[in-house]
Each structure stands twice: as C-alpha cells, then as structure tokens.
Length: 319
Length: 319
Image 1 (spheres, chains in turn blue, yellow):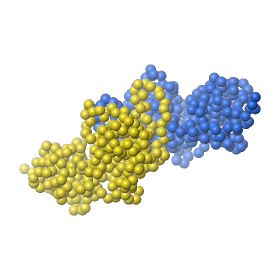
Image 2 (image 1 turned 90 degrees about the vertical axis):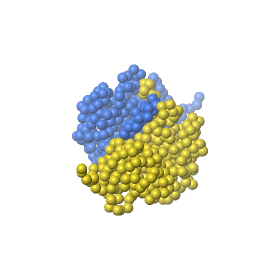
Image 3 (image 1 turned 120 degrees about the vertical axis):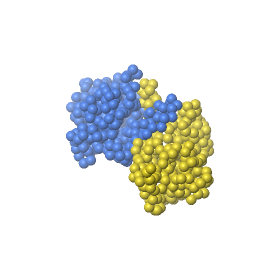
Image 4 (image 1 turned 120 degrees about the horizontal axis):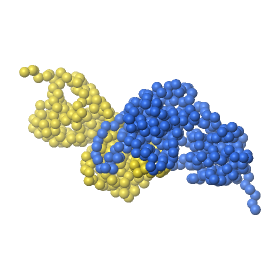
C-alpha cells in the first residue's frame, strides 16, 4: 500500500476537457468526480473545482449532511447554477473565473453587431440559393449601444464597440464613474441601436427583458444576449420580433439548453441563435486552469482570494 | 423659349439613386444620360460625373471624335472601369471618391474576420437545420493580418483590425513609414492569419493572388477580397480551398458580376460570397454627392482638385 499523497483534497467536478493542474501534483489530492458521485464525496473535500459549469449538480448535492469544502471555484463567470440557500448561508468562499471571458465575449458581440449591420446572415442565405442581390448595409460607426451589466464582460463589450465608433453606454446596479445606474436604463434602451445583455442572473435581472422593455426599443434596434438565457422573456422577444417592434436579435444563451429540435425558436424571422459559443474559445481551458492554479497558490499560502463572489448578490461586486 | 441655364455642362452618367446636386442649380447645366446616349453627348460636356460606376460605358464611348470633358469624376474608388489609352493620353483630369468608402469597407472586413473567427456562417447553417452543436471559436486578438494595398481603404482596414487586437501589416507599391514594400509581401502573406486584398487594379496587381501565393499561406489562413475581382485567380482560389491550403475565403468582388446562377463558385466549401456590399452603405449616395459638389466648388473657382488619379498608375498616388 502506498501512502496517500499529501495536501488538501481537491474535488474536480466533471472535467471535460481536463484542466491543466500539473502544478498541483504533490500539493493536493486531486479527485475527479461526476455529478452522480458528488454528494458522496463532498464531505471529504477541502476544495471543489466546478469545471463543467452548465450543471446543477452542486446545487443539488450541497444541502446534504456532513462537512463541506471551505472553498468552491467555478470555471465560469456566472454562479447562478451552483448557488443554494445552504451554500449562501455557509462560510464557504465561492470564487469565479472573472477576467477570462471578457475579451472573447466582447469579440463575439462585435461579430454579431457587424454581422447584423452588414446583413451577413441574409447574404449567406442568398448564396445558398445562388442569388446575387446587392443591398444596402448600415454603418456601425455612429450608432448607439446600451450594454446592460457593468462587470468586466459588459465593460469589455463597451470598450470594443467604442473602438468601432459606437457610442456605448454601460448600465449597472449602482451608478459610478462611466457607469449608469438602473434609473437610466429605460431611457438608454429606448434610444439604442444595440441593446446588449451582459448582466449576472439575479432576482433583480431575472426576466428583465420583457414585453415592456422590448416595447420601448426602437424599431431599428437589435437585441443581443450573451449572458444568461433567463434574463430574457423569450415569448416576449418572439412577439416583439414578429410585430417588428425591433429589427432583430441574437441569443447565445437560452432558457433551456440544448434547445429542443422541435422548439419554435429555431425559425423565428430575425432571430439568430448560437449554442453558448461566445466564451468558448480555443485555449480557454488552459487559461481557466492557469487561473485556478494561481488562486490555489494564494489559498494554500493563506492569502486572500480575488474573484470572491458576493453570495447574496450572485456576482463579484466592486470595481 | 427660356434661356438655357448658365454655366458649364455637367453630364451625369446613369444616376441611380440620384445624387444630391441641388447646390449646383443655376451654376451648371446638369444633363443625365444613360450609357447608350453617352458617346453622342460627350463632345458637349465640360464635366462628366460617372455615378453608376460598375459600367464600361465611359471606356467604350471615350475614344470617339470631337472635344472631350476637361474633368471626369467617378463616384468610386477604382478607376479601372473607365480608363482607356485615349483618356490616359488626354489632358482630362480624373478624380475619384477617395475617402468615402474607407470606414465602411473597414467595418465590412472586420465583420468578415469576426464572422470567420467565430464560425458564424456554420452556426447559422446549423440553426437552419435545428441542430444545437457547441464548438470552439478562435480569438481575433493576437492574430496577424496582412493588408495588401496601402491606400486609404487598406490603411483603414489595418487601423480597424488593430483596434481589435490584430497585428496588421500593410503592403504598398513603395515602402514608407508604417507601410511595407513589395519585397516584404510574400514573407508577410506566409505568416498571416488574414490576408486582405485592398489594392487598386493595375497591371502589377492583376491576378496577383494566384496558385503560388495561395500555396505559401498558412493552412489556418483566411483570404478576403474587398477590392477588385480581377486581383484574384479564382480557379487558383477554389483549388487552394479544396486542397485545404487555406482555411477559408470571403469575396465581396468577383471577376464577373453578377455571378451567373450556374457558376460553381456559389457552392465552394469555405468560400463566402457577397455581391459588392462592403461600401454599399445607407447614406453613401448623399456623401458621394456632397464630395462631388465640394470638388465642383474648387473646379469652378479654378483651384486645384484633390483626389486626382495618376492615369498611368490607375489610382491616386501619394500619402
């Protein structure tokens, strides 16, 4: 029998692809579990790394008996999928992957904005049916965007759009320098050419894009969601598109994923869908692994952790 | 009988949509002609405004007998469609629409680059067949572009890509500060993730993107042409795509436009086509009209004109 490796027990949930945790060899007992084994192993773990983030396994397994990990890190920006009252009430520290997805998501939004302005989806539809039909396109420079969500992703989206000549306003929960507060939201939405959802999913943001808000947008406006499906009342969006209250929309996140093949959402005119690809960049797995190891170094040394989630609010507050 | 309006005769070729020339009322005899009437009216014109630029009518009508306009302005960047030996040899000044298309075309290229990096065409193909298939996308930031053509459009493309974090090199006919000369072309093409054709059509650039040049590009490279169809050996491009020498291409201009419905180009895997839409922005007609009126003001006052084309070289040389 060999002696167990030293160090705390690090439970890694459903790692596919495997994160690069080589630097932790000999410093932690690394144990990979899938969702079905999670509840049984939680009492023996010091740290839980949630790698496969679109799972509800943590929320379901957490409330059981016995000790719980002192630290949970999720390789995602959102934490809504893992929070439960017992975790919120506990002393366990929750951290997220703040910082890794900012620029990739900003690029994705810029790609959607430019595609819609240049009518590229329609152009490629026409190519498929061998139709040469020149049309006019619109300029992106000089248009107005309202980015809802003032975290690093929302701010990166605004920065990127500004470099393209777009006047981009950011709305957050609390007004501060360069960030509008909720009181400005409806006014900014009403005059935006691009309304971009980049907010955390909280009680305050759940379903915030509803019939009333789509109703106040310009007929030429386009709506983009790269944050959380549940920010949007999808039925209201379909209604707004079909009544031409707005000119188009792109959803990279949906309320139910994967979208069922028989969902009517697939074929709503003016609605572009993508399967959560905004942050899905080649190399992100390495970057998420490196970020976790950096946090682990600090945790092991007893230093304070960055990216600590306010468990009541459901995101990392602050700057 | 009313007296003829005063001023020089301004011939406007095939204006659709009509340019806003209101400011010239009472200052010029404005006469609209179509291609078939052009040859008969050329001897009576002082100025020719070529509005419908994708036409060969000027090149065909110019060599006839009688006097010729002293000034030809084309509401386009390229002049290849109007140049003929007789016009080149004449004293007639040719000006173009330099400046109007820079930012629109740069936005269009940015849209194509981001669409290809984010695999958007494939995503929307999958949406059409109701298939939810998450894939990895690539970052645009940190990639390398080689922009071939150092005029205002090429430089605007490079500037815009740089704001997205792309390392963009520009290649021109003559090396100067910030611009590479032809000696660097092949080396830059060989290491670029994006090769972007933005050059004027001249004897030196005709067919320059050929089997040899596609053969030296990286397998992951994408080729984009927003300048002139004849810069590209289309057969060589199709070959390069089918042999996977390069990863993809987007052509906004083709050798023969409109593309015939039975052309094999419509369905080459990895080839995105659009019908000359890069500069086709809403409002460009106003901007082109305003630009011409500004030049007319100077011409009428006997001042020197900007945007004068070097008729030998086929573009506005200089900065």
